Length: 126
Image 1: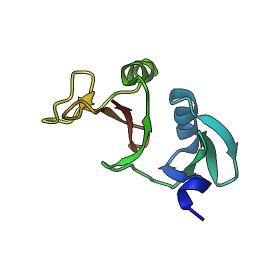
Image 2: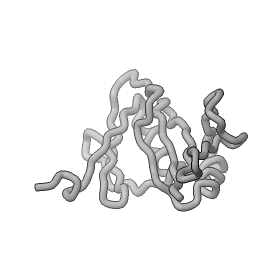
Image 3: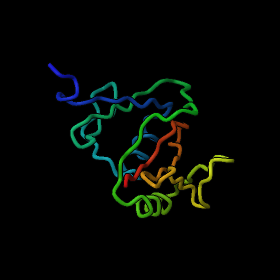
Image 4: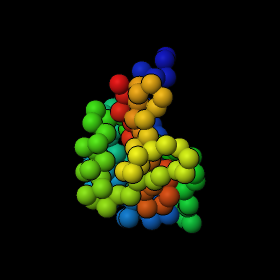
């Protein structure tokens, strides 16, 4: 058995399941599969996201989940149109929209928070 070939499961915690469901489904556009009594389950193109309730949860400053995208500027525009604010870290060299380009230009990355403060990101390679 090779773990990566079975399919990954990731977990995002929330203090408010209804608010988080709306954000992940409606703002991020993820495919909601079911609520199994414990978590809202989303399909991430073969991987699984379980959105779980933890009373009083507050996200941290470290990335919890990210997505590879083919056009980061278009993805940012779509999310911005749905109310997402992108984070700008002082001294990191991001542009005014919050887009950071890696030295050499191999990747471009932006960061944003979900309603619980979980740090999320988008990355465009090459």
